[in-house]
Image (cartoon, rainbow, N blue to C red; front, side):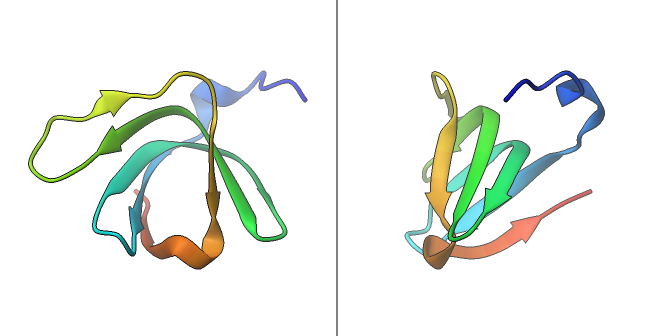
Length: 68
C-alpha cells in the first residue's frame, strides 16, 4: 500500500485507555486495528517521542480520538 496523499490527511490524537496518547495520520482502519504513520508517542507531560515506521493500535485499547 502506498501513501501518496499522506500530506492531505489531518493529524489526529489517539488517546489510549492506558493514559498515553499517539498523534499521527490515520492511513488504515481495518477490523480491530488502526494504523498511524508519522506518529509521535506522548506519555505523561513529555513532548513526545517520534515512532519509527507505522504504529498499529488495537481499537479495544482506544479511549477516544481527537480530530480537527
